[in-house]
Image (cartoon, rainbow, N blue to C red; front, top):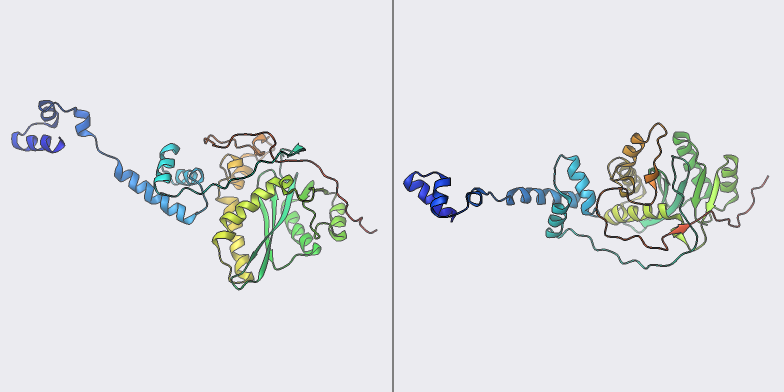
Length: 307
């Protein structure tokens, strides 16, 4: 139809509106220009971002596009995300009923830190251990130390460096590893009046915030990098930590980075949205269920510090 209207315009010098009226074609349909080129450009940029961030979903990619000034509806972006074959495979998780108290929502930084270890290997097979320290309020990664082994004194040296820069926490939530049950570590925390919140053995969900951080560390960093040696792992870990704190949008913070979240809540403002819920406006497909990951303050048998 558009070709016939164009031919009439050329032969009889008719306007487009008159030619479409003679053929009984709606003028709006004749003037419509498809937006495939715009979508193709958007899909190309989406593929580039997905290649740079292979474990990001469409929500975080949408945040990155908005930072670049691209205005696109999240439903349209999800359609292009699916059409490009970028959708991530969802992992099925077992739902287990648990008894306890939910994680306490923190209202300020340094109220609670979380510690845990993640293991990996170099390209030559040498063992690596990653010590991650995260703040429960702003989700900031305070430290990501890499070494072949960690003793209790090495852990306290890392915490001393963090404390000198950010101050000391009121409590530390951790598991029952030998590094955390040593007399040196317990006495170090007692000197600084830091409460130790040990989780129950075999229940890592009671340290859910750090376990979530470990999942992102494994999924977005360890699984997509190959480490030539220990020094290469330390350099890459430092770069990823900076990206995690200043570039990566966090769903638990309303898709802000920890640095942006701290900037907005500076001055003692309350921040109740920094719990486990997602305060953003994105549609979520997960439904809230009873028996969510629960925890409380657990007392564990710990060796007493020597006088």
